[in-house]
Picture 1 (cartoon, rainbow, N blue to C red):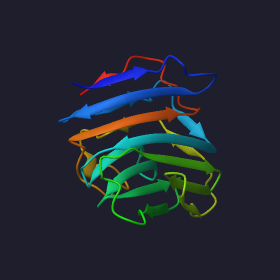
Picture 2: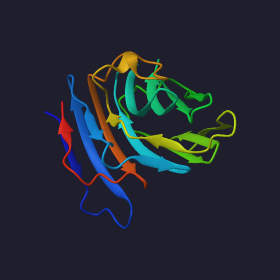
Picture 3: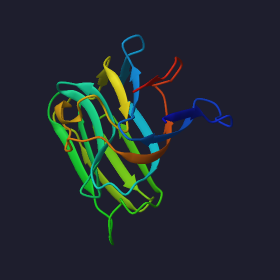
Length: 183
């Protein structure tokens, strides 16, 4: 069964969560009462899986979204702030990231500049298109899958994870302060 728990040692603004997903489970947080409106973001998570493809996280709709996925064993990031997407694919030097070992992913965005690193070594930096700098989302925040992953904007994968383990840290502006929905 799906397990999500807040870590008791989380300090300050940092909220730390551990989740285990099996079968068709995923995490869904409704942002409609607490929408994201940010010019800078940081998401840090660790995962382990044997599956080559699956949605790690997604928030947003139409042309304003963040999508992080495992695609053919590489980490894929797509961010669109409303004027065209920034896309990055981080591939390991040897093997794939779906080796059932823990891998650390960090995504930071400051205005248009986006950086993604995997395992603290593999880093890609780039810029979103045009002059838009704000990420806005009043939709849902998904981790590990969604009701219809293939239909999410910017999603390079069409499936959810069937077995994956996540340790994730969410930095403001998103604060998980109401009950988690389980699917």
